[in-house]
Image (cartoon, helix red, strand yellow):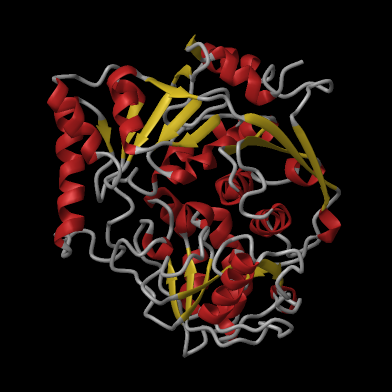
Length: 465
């Protein structure tokens, strides 16, 4: 029997090129302001319209400020890109959630919360973390700008079919261990290239127990181990999340959709190209110590030595990474002074993430030497935070919640961590300069980020639960 991935892929094949790629139909296309301008220019040069405009949804997110969004964007480049997205959406008849719109936010947050992301879909966006949407049992992956143009023009894309891998996490997670910790654990075990060429299905008791927000976090990070994408079989948790969303099917169409979605999970006899298993009991709260997401340890573990089998180039890279971060093999990074804390991004900018953060800071105070940026992934998330009273808990602890956007994830807007400063971040990448030129990033869960924010140092969140 076919895997979940095979079922979706095969049902979307339009044509196959002999000894070449597959022409794949795309159900949903997301656009933001950074990777789309050249694609629209390409359409103009060729005199083409968008083939199926109702399939594409746009939202500015990468370059937008997270304060004073009611005022003109100060940075000229950012302002031009956001204005160009507005122009392109209007000219080509696409749905746009502009800055200030109640449905505006990070594209990988607003797609699911509006019911635009659904099980069985093929989904693309000019952004590597499109893999987020795989949490719904969708085949979702990032594409380049030339491919964005291809999808706009034809609603199809040329792709080589990836191999399949199933990663099963058996057992039950310990208290204080989150989906982000699962992701960082798996990436450290797999390495940043361990899933290259594969589409990964996550399975097992620990995965089924995750909320949809947790599943999105896990699938979001799939790309960091080289995978083309990650996905999780849809189940009752998925259906409940999707139900009554603004764009989800209604009435009889909903019943038909759910009936189809129930046929999607991989069967007991499904064959994967590779199978990997992990035990949930082995996963503890984690942090990164280097400059890629695979360089991770449990918070209470020492920084490891470079693997003995590494070649000279790998050893040099390892040492360079530690030197950049200011860490040494054998030393603990627990207790390291923290300058910035960032809660947000398409990885951890949802309601569950704010709940986790609030659970730690409740009754405590922000450390006076920590600058904290708490950025919801959308206006809807911000509204939910307020409805639950989490904003009061967070503000009483001395924190301020900013306006939605990608923020400090990637230093393309005003939220940049200064050179030399160390940030504990809930985002997805810790490359050199990722959060600002010379900035040092330690990736962590919302619980670990909150623990750092109130103690002023890297802290095991289990000590505060």
